[in-house]
Image 1 (cartoon, rainbow, N blue to C red):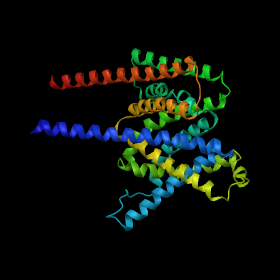
Image 2 (cartoon, rainbow, N blue to C red; image 1 turned 90 degrees about the vertical axis):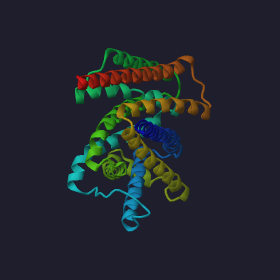
Image 3 (cartoon, one colour; image 1 turned 60 degrees about the horizontal axis):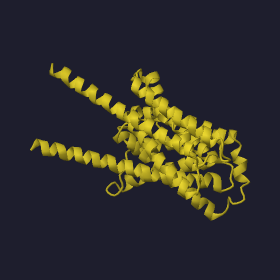
Image 4 (cartoon, one colour; image 1 turned 30 degrees about the vertical axis):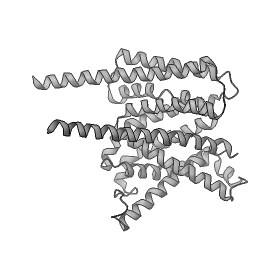
Length: 333
């Protein structure tokens, strides 16, 4: 009776992971296209304001759910927590700073580059994950894994070179993409650490991140001169503008939640690889949607990055399996 139960539990686990990963893919791709429309289609040069409104919307959703859970506990469930608690703030604010950097640089990258190139522009996440894992955790990477990272860097280089030959190339957008990859790697690593301070509650961590980020964005918008830009916007008082902004805000809340959920049910490494594979599908959809024609070498860069990421995943899987067998053998002895 033990083996069937174990298989059933394993099957349930894989189904749960599959559902979370699928949700991440769908919501992430949808969010990218919605954000591209908001950042480039509104004739409003205020990318940080757009991002701030998204985290403000997410904060409001979480706050509302928190109130409803206290008033109608049988209908609405939300973990109990206070973002204004000093101890909570001290433990979560480092991750919230990374969260702010991650979503702001991602949106800035998306503002200046096309959706198709957005994948290659942010493809260095795995490489940064290896470097930061060694720098922060002291974990070394095997030569095979390093070669895979070199393959990813080569694909990134080819992609930038080919994109630079087109009229849509943006150097500042590419730089923001690299910074976004770095921020995502740091965020993935620190999410696992921070979840233990909120009792592994994804909703609660999302709530705190968005509340703190909403405050952090205010000085950034002021420094970037976006306050006056927004006040002078010709469509500021029109209902359709706030309607599309609200759609973007809901998407921002959803992607923040499913990102944290994917990291929780898998690992930072698996999340990064899933994000890379998702971005490949996103590239194909974008070139078709925007009717873009790309060169053979441009597509080659995408394939090289994807293969490098896939090989890296396989190498790490083999290494982890071997480490697990060695640990089991040592326990038997």
